[in-house]
Length: 233
Image: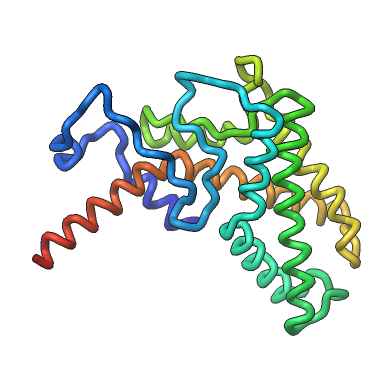
């Protein structure tokens, strides 16, 4: 995550690269579809590139986003990483060690993410009439966009238009943590629960930052690949 942040801060959205200037600008060109993964692995299903033509989601669409995020390879990989870290630190002794112990850690970690996704992207947004999508800013200074992306964890859009405190994100993750006490056999203290809540909100916020700057980072990588290909020729 640290290297990604260094990379995105180095991107200057206000400056235009000569390679970009050489691309013909057409008013009727069809924009490229939004990439469904950041760095080929992080789920990017709930990102909207603009707010200019806002259309609220139906309940079915909200739950579809929750399903896509939950059953994606990136979520599985993230759960596997957290499970490994938890086993190394022996966070839940009753899970044990070895392959059998790791499978329990993984099941618990993956459940944390799946329940959190459905709570924050499907159930609470439907009940509270809030939009679970991340709306990319895309303009302004790097620091302004960084603050904007972090802010969307705490401020979101309503189905009826306008903005509102992001109850879905915070209440959804809090509910997910409360549910998780049922399958962590060692139990969770108030401190453990608060820590896990922070992790889940932190993961969502980090994902927002990457989603905001992903087009800039992707273009930077593509330019490097083009330059490398030209050098090899």
